[in-house]
Image (tube, rainbow, N blue to C red; front, side, top):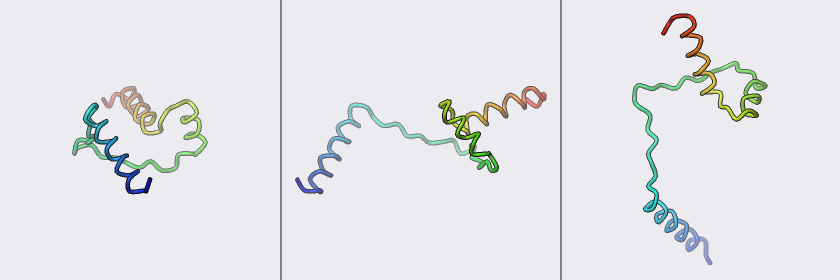
Length: 73
């Protein structure tokens, strides 16, 4: 089977599966802005990964808790 035939078969399978379970678009609201965090030790990131956590969600939760504790929100 040639590469183009394999590619066509794969495209057909994707289109068929998309008919059964449509893909959702993951669009963030315009008001949400991502901020890059620097100077986070790689050891900390590895600890989070080992515990199946992501830096972004962990940092967001930590900031929320601190802001709440400080009475900012």
